[in-house]
Image (cartoon, rainbow, N blue to C red; front, side):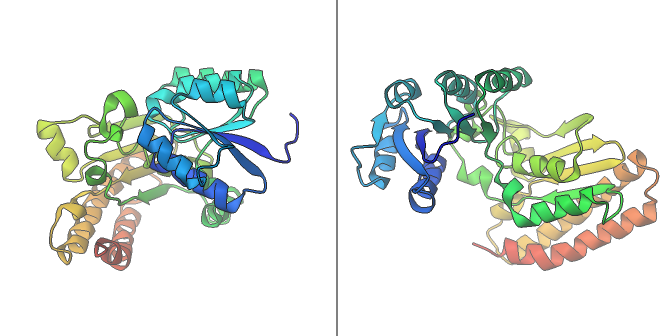
Length: 310
């Protein structure tokens, strides 16, 4: 694989996320990255992205990724498009001789994942997924501590993500199954799954999903709307629980949000510790209860601040 002093980069997908990447290329690494092309079927999106380059005539603009690959012949591409398009765009880019940085999730099925990984190996090109937490200090520190055995055997990991995803993505492609191939957990929530697996070095054995993913209505909509979107993974001796409480953003009284968040976390963890005890008998129930109490203390300190944010 040849060394490149300057990477000629094409950007496939000029929406908000793609333009975020473009901003970093233009402002933080312009000495090693030269943006040569932009592609998006949306004319306003690609025009907005081109405007960020100062309407640079050296940056070519296209309505399709095929045209970008053929006419600019970049060294690498960033793919930031609706998830369902990732597979074909990755395969096309690799076939055109490009390295690929794709936004998460990589693809929408195990079969597609196997196909693009095989294509990257055959092309001898880098295929990377934009899980940026692998490069961030706190996660590197935690991974090193776990791998070195400094904190002992890990038997329980609880991840918290609170964001206004439901309301912010109303009517957008991220909530359409045909384009996103899943809901919040499949989207930004996948960062949690990725970083927990990376830090612990574990792989899932059994997957249990409770809650709808996308394009939901009626009772399922109410379930998801009120924050009972729970994804749980069972591992050998380890129970990982991930939940996203959208409820705090539906309450008009800011002072009530942290209280509801605390109650939500406490009750959910009471259920979780019971499952932990059943899955891992080594963890006594009194230890599990102390964990739930600890989470409540953390919730008081952290969620009160977070939930008061506008």
